Image (cartoon, rainbow, N blue to C red; front, side):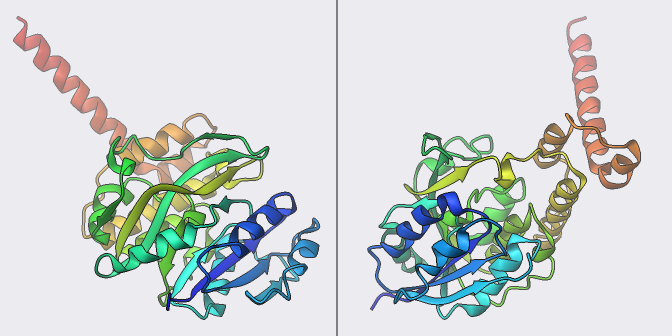
Length: 305
């Protein structure tokens, strides 16, 4: 018999997209799953929609918060604690998927040893159901995500996740349940998923499916659509990078990751005092870059004399 999957649907004010999300989960061709419905004190009519599924045979829990948790990852923790299964799918309430999502991904857990994370390619879709591209970190490796692959977890971290979050959407993922420590993660709003995937892959391996099975919704309330350059987000990203480097026993080198963060934040006003205290690595990276450029210019002049 196929293993049980616990599907967690954490919702907050996604009334507009919620029905499509629920249908795409409850109509899965993979039959052995439970659904945990969570609402983080929505102010719209989400609760009415969720209550329509309260008596569905696949629904094992439906929890309405009386006070907003303040973090999407606090809802992740709550859902995982309620889950009966060893396999977890966090199906974000504004995304949707193909009906064979689980049927295609679940067998991959048994293709190789110690797989803790399986995820698929995602399409981007806007609030009006227009598909426009696939979100992928091709700047790191233009070919990497064009075909399916298996990789050792720590190798994935060293080559990809130490530069940026290369698992772009939680809805595209199914992962093996572990005793996760959410102490740091649930204090985050922006980088908690990145830290979560790294923590998971420190002790397990990953399998990527290049087939598009998930649809990642972008709209004006999506976290990714908000302006990058605020202090909380920068601090979360910097702390996550520090955790990653210390976990894989590498020196914190000021490579693509810090230049990427600098590129994202440089358009916004941030005090020099904050940059001095929190963004010191960026100054080191910039100084190193200027040194390399100057060295190249001097060498070029000498060779052409």
